[in-house]
Image (tube, rainbow, N blue to C red):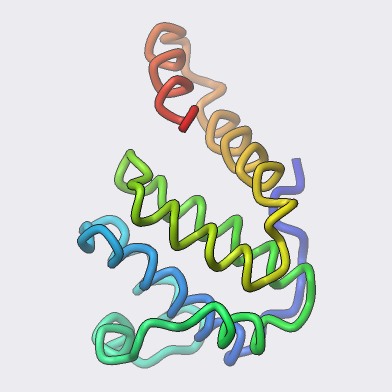
Length: 147
């Protein structure tokens, strides 16, 4: 499965993605795993050493700003897939996270693709667990992903 197509992500794209991910993570209270994922992504993508602190000081990115920076369909799809993965990082997608992801999808012109992208994310997450032999545990995880 080629979940993330290889695309060129420049520093301005990475910053917009990090700001969007941080806004989603922060929407229902910032969880440790979410903060670590967003901070690590931004630091790896060229952010400062204090990547998370920089994001905390930034205003939440608007959908319009995000759409202005993520100027291609592949960049926009990568952002939404990453946003959905990050929303699952704490084990549950909250209503606030879901609402913000939907608003970003609207601004990015991907509303009609959102359910397909969600399905791809769920398939990807389950594929990462395919080697586990505890089928009862996998069934419980699959139920949790059916939001």
